[in-house]
Image 1 (tube, rainbow, N blue to C red):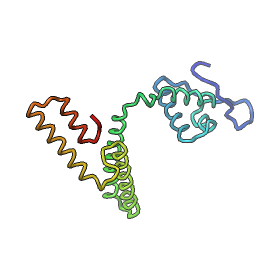
Image 2 (image 1 turned 30 degrees about the horizontal axis):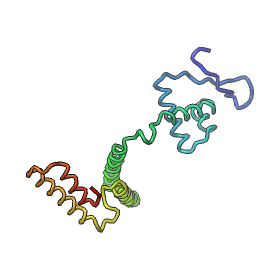
Image 3 (image 1 turned 180 degrees about the horizontal axis):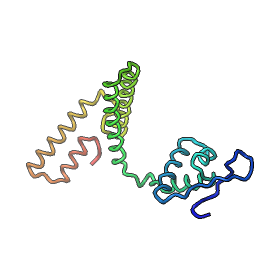
Image 4 (image 1 turned 180 degrees about the vertical axis):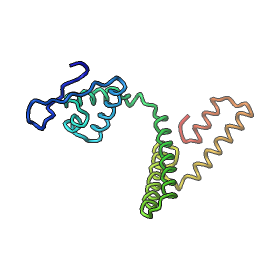
Length: 180
């Protein structure tokens, strides 16, 4: 039995016939394992995943366990990179939805694309507010823009006048409302 793994009867329960899983190379196994993990994490049961991918339920558990162990820990994630990647994904989704809204011949599809665009815009705004890129109260947005511009102007003047950086930092902290 070279290159094959016995995985069970393939005759509808009548007897002697067995099916064999073909052996897979490392790349195919990696791709399959990723697909297994995605399906399991999306809610597919172990037994259904085993049947879908032609492996045992025990192997499904091992694959998911290995996948979870391979993920980076939260404290190891590049939070800024994750946020920037998410903002890029939002921008791409908005662009694709705009294209769909512009090119669809079906009124319902165009309307749904516009609605989905607005949802993605709202999600992007929410993310920016959550990470401090936008104020939580958008009514204060102009005030914050003015304060940031004022702080940049003050720092530029300090640089031209040769004010020490520790004094600049103290002033910026005071403007931002933090203690020196």
